[in-house]
Image (cartoon, rainbow, N blue to C red; front, top):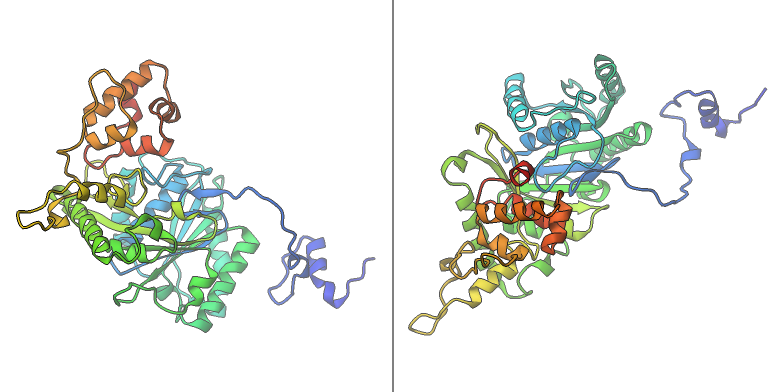
Length: 429
């Protein structure tokens, strides 16, 4: 007979395959033995498995349509858009809501059924309204039972591995003040440690000039990822540390303001005509413990829900290869002629989409990636994609090697905002 001392009670429960009560310290799990593990990325430039993330932004800026599409993409094994790619097996997702009614969810679900028509039946997305507060003892007591019941409804499918909590304000009594947040975070961390779940929490911002998130600074400190969603590109850039290397030289406020004004002008142009009813925002990975700065850079995201075939479109702005980058903007400014009084023209008068000085590739000379991108000519891009395919370039990586660029550059050509997206079947015909 094995005798267990008081400080070994966690061993007793583990030896007999029992779940220790929350008040029994599990000393065996306190020792950290670092080893090199392959971190599983669930969605590129978003989060990895086991992360606790916060997506935050102002009310009605598109957070809920975004996270529902994200859940649908992860469960179906489809990419969210041309930049954020799903990198895992299908994941079952549970959205726990405190602020949406059935009719509102039905509308968003109908959009996503058109965005992601191909579904993997091995995983699911489920929505639940939870009547208790997650920063209370009672609310935490029944939460795991909710997940068990959801899994029981979907016997034969993958169990829930991703939780989306929408939102802190509605699912807690005051979960963004310092004491309540610590209670909530400790509960979420326990769920992660016990079940391996990936957790996404939706939150809101102040209406102040900087669009900071409500509540305690402890939110910034404790979560793995903090993702900003907003309507102002300058604010999105200010959220990121290290982004300065992609912006005008430090101290050149006039150039910075001119560049931000040009981005606003371009965005306004992308939201004209039928796209005036788009759900759109800038998305920036403000904090990402597992991500380098170059993949945190802001992107413009747009989706027209009432379109016949709606889809999320993401536009990279700051990288050097982007036609919207500071280097592209400054290159156009250098070509601006002076006015009769010797003063340079205003930057606003030189839109970034000015194509007058772009050299179109010669008929029989293989173009560079940059020449194709700047041509903004879908037929021309398709022509050279098809020539590459005729030379046995059957994948995007083959295409990239053939053009002497990187694979993400091919994605940029396939999803240039100036023309309709190019599908692989278009150039493989």
